[in-house]
Image 1 (cartoon, rainbow, N blue to C red):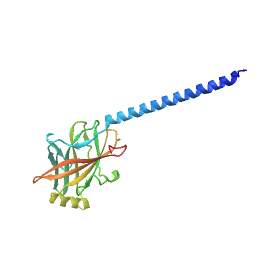
Image 2: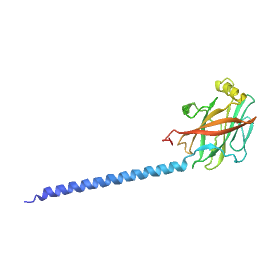
Image 3: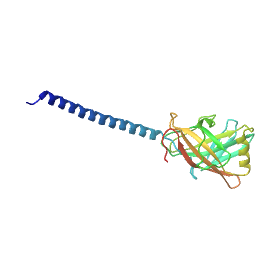
Image 4: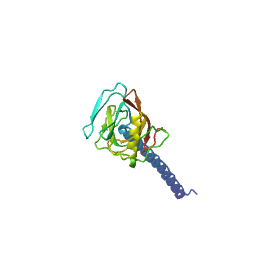
Length: 210
């Protein structure tokens, strides 16, 4: 005789298993969709700084002590004056989001991309908020004012001898996420000019391009 109770139990179990598999597949697809949406949102907010183009317009900026600097194209302004060392670099944001400058780390010599960046906690903060809009040009500025610092003395020699040096810039998107460090190489050209170029980028909060 046919055991209808056993058949019914088996059919119920199979139906439950199929439903569970369908639910699992739907949840995975939903999670994947959420991840893709989050990634797309991050890409819409992600900044990426590089040196300005050679034909970009002249830009001027003033420091808190009244010192003015002027840069054009992909140039940098570097000068030791009034007991301080001033740095200004023209930058272009080729990313999709606003770049918010968070800190900087000066190297008294040129460092290659194989040399890793310092801990973000060691970066110097800015005294003013610096923003660079996506697809636009802007400026980064920094100054060393403590002549007793080792990096001040070494950079003073570097500038006097017209040698190349590097600066690491730490920046985020407009909500403080997607921390990125970009390394600038600053190189002398001619008798009194400097040019800047970006050598490498590090993404601190997610996988990078390498």
